Image (cartoon, rainbow, N blue to C red; front, side, top):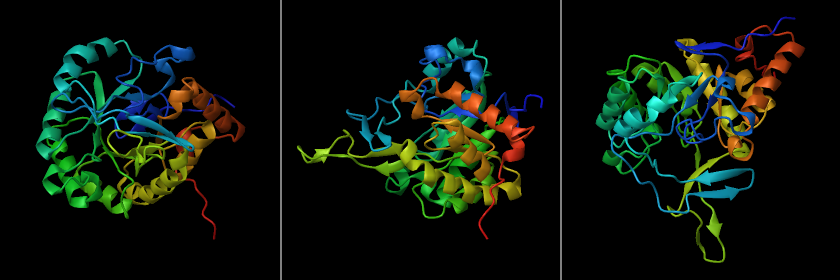
Amino acid sequence: MTQPKLAVDLAGLKMRNPMIVGSGTFGYGEELINVAGFKNEDIGAITLKGTTLEPREGNATPRVAESASGMLNSIGLQNPGVDAVISDILPRLRSFQTKLIANIAGRTAGEYREVAKKFREAPEIAAAEVNISCPNVKRGGAEFGTDPGAAAEIIAAVREVWDRPLIAKLTPNVTDIASIAEACIEAGADILSLINTLRAMVIDTALRRPVLGAGSGGLSGPAVKPVAIMMVHQVYQVAKEKNVPVIGMGGIASANDALEFIIAGASAFAVGTAIFWNPSVCKQIIIGLRSYLIENEINDVSDLVGTLKLNQ
């Protein structure tokens, strides 16, 4: 058998393979390049750290805490602001042999729109991922992504000014993620990515206080994988009818993990927390994915998407 095809096309976002590095786990792409044999050519795309209109200092420390089979983070979208990212950081990434995805965040629909408008002038950016897990300041601090109307408002605002593939990143902190997905598609999302982190807390029993400086944070890592797979499966049922591809993420640390997401309906997948303890994990996953396709005589990784056989 010839080498299987790993290249994928997600609504115009063409990647050499279906692996993406998740936002917030790789900084702006420079931190882990060539560490432990990693090369940016090994992956399909890097999602940059979340970027807002103005600089943000982030949350109080500590910002990370370990938990069983995972970790909590409460970074608070620390970043230098979109203007600094475009002028100071993106020029250093032009030599990268992989696609770059901007991750956009904000406090209002107008802020999201302005960040997207600025990134539109940056040719290095191949796609935009909209983080709708940010608090909606006009609605008491609830996440934009927990309400179909608010989620659609953000996606529509970005769609007005964005001319490249648009990804809506969905929060798992909802009772019906399929309805949020449908609202984002109707508002103009080309691609859906999920899941973002689950709200969580760790307590220092000696002090009787939260370990994280902000009190709570987002849980990621292997602990969230079963939840993420189920939600990818649910969203895929909606997305496939609209021909909208899904990017799955949440606890991927091996080729088998990635395969679970693909079979559940993900056309691509993102790796995040696993990179912190194994910088070589991206390369290992691609090797394992290729071996699985060869062993099972599958010529194209896309042929595996959504092939889950439900028990009757």
